[in-house]
Image 1: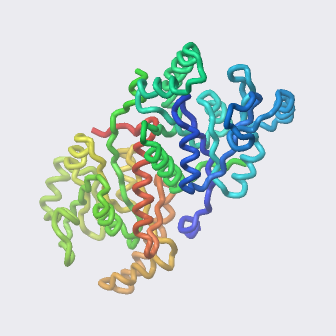
Image 2: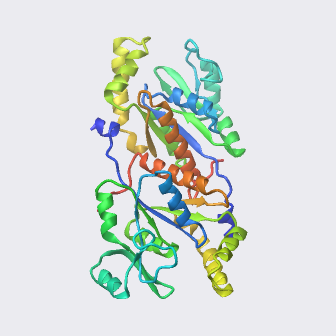
Image 3: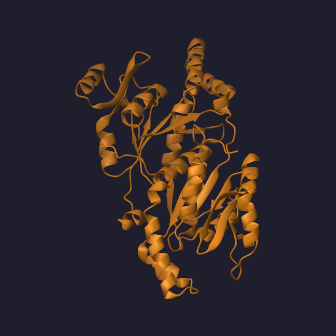
Length: 205
Length: 205
């Protein structure tokens, strides 16, 4: 009995990296990989067409609307939603497989989707990534270029509304201009602290 | 309202570093200081006489039994107890002053004392420091030298019983032989993660 506390078993985490548009979720995940942080990234499935530079399986799992319907019917998604008229969802199998083999799983999920995952898996570690100010957030959304002024305005309004959801999350990490490594440091610290919990979060299976 | 989440105020933490005898609490605190971790260490007051090398105000606040009685009477202690026939307790004033001025406070408290502090301040961040095995713990307790075989046996029995209290703590950090910096890294990560909480722990005043 006593020895359990000397040598507790490793409990893999389900980590949800969320935040507003323009928070820099993709940059953070890329830098985490570059720095060798050990985690399994499970990509979101989507029925939209790939944007230039996006790679199937790396950035998203690009599915047809029909394939998506099949996955929904077979209960193969952790959560799914229709966002901007496109299906979006997290495939269940790779998440459960990675956790089952003892690896931390990282998901990139929007603020809405995080609420769904939290309801189903309250033990998920949820991180809200955000810009350091409203001004910075606006600049980033403008910089995307591809969007019209109306789209930028809509995204900004949505992002500012989503900021009110911060208290629903476990952690809040600032990804300031030029502060990508600091944001990654904070996330690494969060994962380390979570693994040092005296009572681990409930296992997911 | 929204801007509160962009710029939340810094919430200082009350951190309790606890663990069994022989866990290496003092070495960890010393190394944390050497590495420039920002915190205010509030020393425990005790009515026992200083051991060789111990310095008043740095290691402990050495008080007479009468001075201790006065502090108890005036409610100037966060918690106090009689351990091995000697008074032991945490002075309240320096803790509240440091927290009030926005600094994290670190206390070194035994497992019993942590239970008292937790009851009074459930928002304290409690860390259980431990050796990496029963064998290592035994070696460390034997190495102290000054104690008799009976005293070592008693301390070991107490330490093993205290290991059962790990689940009452927020975090569990292993201080293995040669792993002092790793233990300190883990504590630094815990403090960083705690400061990244989306909803800070309740302020103490």
